[in-house]
Amino acid sequence: MAKIGTDLNSFILEEERKYPNATGSLSRALVAIESATKVIASHVRMAGLADVLGKAGKTNVQGEEVQKLDELANRLMVEYLSQCGEFFALASEELEEPIFPEEGKNGKYVIAFDPLDGSSNIDVNVSIGTIFSIHRRVNSDVSDFLQEGYKQVAAGYVIYGSSTMFVLSTGNGVNGFTLDPSVGMYLLSHPNIKIPEKGKIYSINESNDKKWIDKGLKDYIESLKEEGYTSRYIGSMVADVHRTLIKGGMFAYPADSKSKNGKLRLLYEAAPMAFLTVQAQGVATTGKEDILNVKPTDIHQRVPVFLGGKYEMEKLKQVLING
Image (cartoon, rainbow, N blue to C red; front, side, top):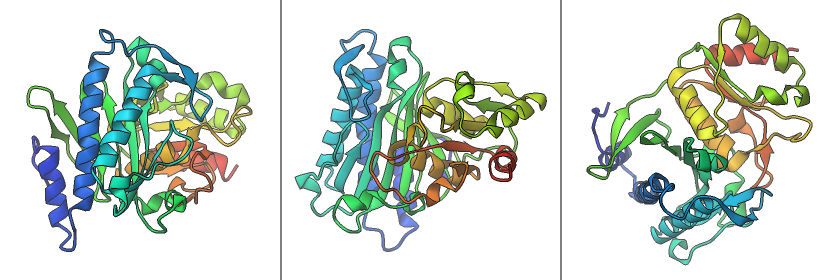
């Protein structure tokens, strides 16, 4: 196991050495993400001083209002990931169609990302983040993004909060790295993250309970309350999932009468967070099947999301599947 304080680049190289046939492509791809998020983090820290707060006066492909920092983060991710030459294609939550950069024509991977999750919270200084999901290039077209989540070769997020953290899995567990701004490096601070089997927190927007399609969900939440669980809901997926990974419990964004297929995007949010959750020995489901087994049909597909510790998810399964 890597030592506390190991920098992210060294960690990535050590992981690469475990695979004799590795070419270094994934390592270089991850370093490009690292570089982009460091720049994004610097802009987030300056958001109250620089002219990057507020709305950009347009909507994205999801029909959501675009924030100025959204546009900046998206541009930085596209720029850094394109230039590294390791990605054949890039799909962003902010863009209607994937990008196929000239520099990546020989790239081995495709990446889907949410450049700035939780951006509606920017103006009130709530934690936000960047989420990413990497798959191997298979067919050399848009169908490369339509692979199940269990086929991800890496997934992670960066949370811009009281400190900036890079949380990563390449299929060998989950590790968290905290950015030390004095040296400009992500240093291992949370090795081998594992979700507690049973937590004390549930995270769901209860104001939508009258709209929930799964009627047993209200009973499930009430049963957690009876066991002494407390509610913590930030409304920024990165922040809510990060807390769940560290402290346990459950996070959910279910389907409702307004968003009948769920609200969270499969490629950009649900699949990478499910990958991390499972790698941390938790469970991730749509309520009907494992999120990692869902075969995407569209790059902007949405799904219901439930993830957390084994106890909470087994209890949920009894409610939603067994009725």
